[in-house]
Image 1 (tube, rainbow, N blue to C red):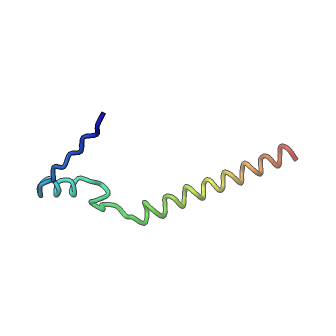
Image 2: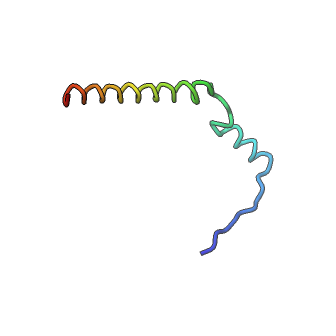
Image 3: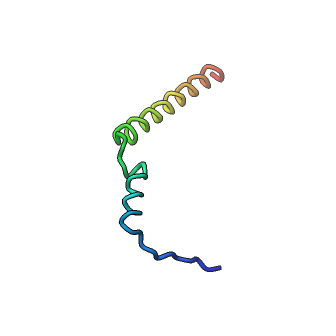
Amino acid sequence: MRLQVVKDQADENTFQEWRDEDYMNKMNFNPLVMFVVIPTVVQAGCLIFMGAAMLLNTAIFA
């Protein structure tokens, strides 16, 4: 089974349509929130739950 490579080039209208429709390409969002704030909140939540699990284990088994 061979892989078929399509070498058709996109015309200017197709390229512009893709640029207008693609979410990441439009940059119609705040990158600081998406790539810094949300991962920081998730990481802090994981750290808090890990600490709570260790505290619970200490209370139960110590």
